[in-house]
Image (cartoon, rainbow, N blue to C red; front, top):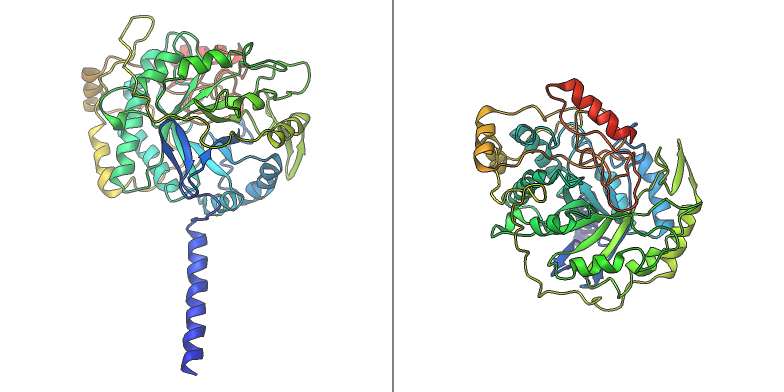
Length: 478
């Protein structure tokens, strides 16, 4: 009788433990991804990990919704992800005050990882007034997002910014992005979280793409160097090739880079009809695997810019021809065998010299706003979600510190999307294209390759507000 009672008690304990483990989202389908040299690896199997994914922000900036906090949305879309054959999604903005447990568990059970931009339209670095927008309130929002998502092992990485440098004359913004990278990495360490990779998603600007890659991976302070580098690249259009598209040139450009590089957005839509996605064969081949670790197609849902793989109408998802083409390419192209020729011998980059009109980022970063240091000990506190706007919450002492330690000023983020005049920049998606995202960055008008995403809202609307609004509307129109 005693043995029976003990046995029953043990079973109950094991069952409770199993439920608890599931609730804590430690699912073996998505073991943490680690970085070795310039590649990603599965921490359990030791296998090389290649990102096969999509950029995901259904509704875009015109109907901004946190897709990872709505279980119905997750249950609608995750089976579609599985049918497509992907292992990663990128989300440009979330509401850190909401509960994401169920959706993150559903993603984990489906073997899908998340790359998350930590900015929101209202809490981001402003391209107009970077010194002011880089403040303790902004960092509280960023740190609170880290607090919310650090427990999920299927968070592959975090982006501190998206296309903040979006032209040949916005390179001074890089100083503040790099300061945010430093603060995020130090916060993750101080809070004793898993070492989640922190990176930057760059517009493919011919004039400064190499300088940007070098800058974010240079210097003696390892905390200020990114862990991964995403490139938003739309240079392969239709039935192109490794040579014609410029992919061969990119391989040469980044061949000595010491960190993992991947395409954080790709999928040119300047084609007569549907996109054939013939670049998949090149991206997941030994021609590129020594440098690149896969990529994310822009984008899941069809928004105003017409980059979507599916059309969403309420609970109904219609798979477009682009979806079927991409699914077919993913299915027929395997990852390179073995380690794909990755390298552990590449060194950190040399910091590019300041050159007016060419590269204007400062190698001396601004000190973190003093008030933010309290978060390192006690945590970020109550998440404020997407309602808070921090771009003008600067303190005079923080502004003085910034101006004395760094000459750069203007940063925010990237091409976010059609959210026209939002004073928030951080948002969206991407390079020149984005109408659908709203996440990390602000307005991006990336020139580079062929993208045509609608340019998004740009920075803090400060005096004279009227002219800034006009500038943003003009960016959007063109």
